[in-house]
Length: 149
Image (cartoon, rainbow, N blue to C red; front, side, top):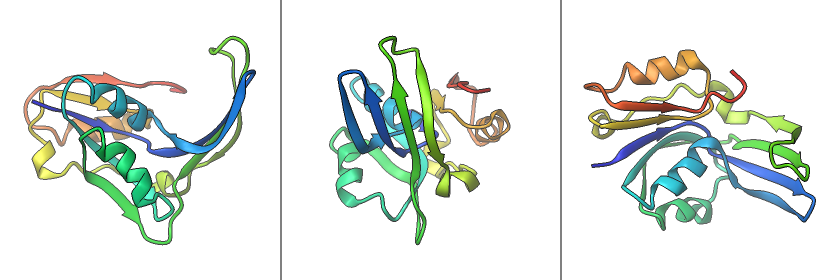
């Protein structure tokens, strides 16, 4: 049994009152997949640019996340987000968003991912979320990240 996670894989630069990190792996699907991997196998569907290195992919592979659904766009750049958090972690300010290859992302589930009991849809347009649901065989339990929608 496994879960399919669809959404953003990104690079994030984050500032907080206690520190700062530059270009760390981020994205809704990434964070979900890493957390879910402690409980069951995860099949990831996302898009990245050629700047998403083999070392970056190994972060996911080390958690046994299946990357058959990870598309790499030649010559493209991975989605990038820069933000600042205040003392209250719910207080977030977006400083920069570069959608890059994510702007044209239309997820296509690999055939092996279409029979799943669980589907996580990351922070993507609700119309795209519905397109993904239409690719799944059966009636999985669906969880959605609806931030900003």
